Image (cartoon, rainbow over all chains, first blue to last red; front, side, top):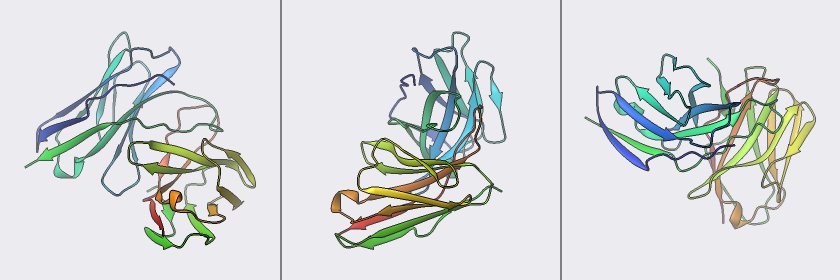
Amino acid sequence: DAKTTQPPSMDCAEGRAANLPCNHSTISGNEYVYWYRQIHSQGPQYIIHGLKNNETNEMASLIITEDRKSSTLILPHATLRDTAVYYCIVRVAVKAAGNKLTFGGGTRVLVKP
Amino acid sequence: DVKVTQSSRYLVKRTGEKVFLECVQDMDHENMFWYRQDPGLGLRLIYFSYDVKMKEKGDIPEGYSVSREKKERFSLILESASTNQTSMYLCASSLSGQGTYEQYFGPGTRLTVT
């Protein structure tokens, strides 16, 4: 799986959009970009994933650059409950046997009132 | 609403004890996973199972075993607990087959071995 680079931490004002960057310059053509988050003392939570096109769901939007070397997760209206560590992961879509997740350092996001 | 539950949030055991961690999912998922998470080391896969009675070793299986007698339940067993197995243990499940299936995690069990 391709390596990802994320800033270690960032602050965000409550009610504003939070833009979380991720670099994955060695991504392969068959690798997807996934985002998970982990709120303190809880299990990781899936947020969104994409291959080439931008994606949106009820939690967030994912913007992937045309060359696919980087992406941005957007939380449109951050709330205090969005305070968490956010992980960007790049992986192929394989049969789930061996389909493990590997988390790097992630970005620690603090949403402030 | 999808749900993965783990038998305990916090557990304290003594060195040498046999420890059972239970995980149950209600989504009819074929795949289930056990990870441990430690500061600075991220998430590491211990074992996974892709069907009832089927299991595969992950990256760090030593000192652990697993059991999957029913589709919805995946147990992690520490045969003889040691202090270096003090950690957060996370169970996850996912659909199977070719695809981009996300994993759903339980709340975790924080195990302390004294």
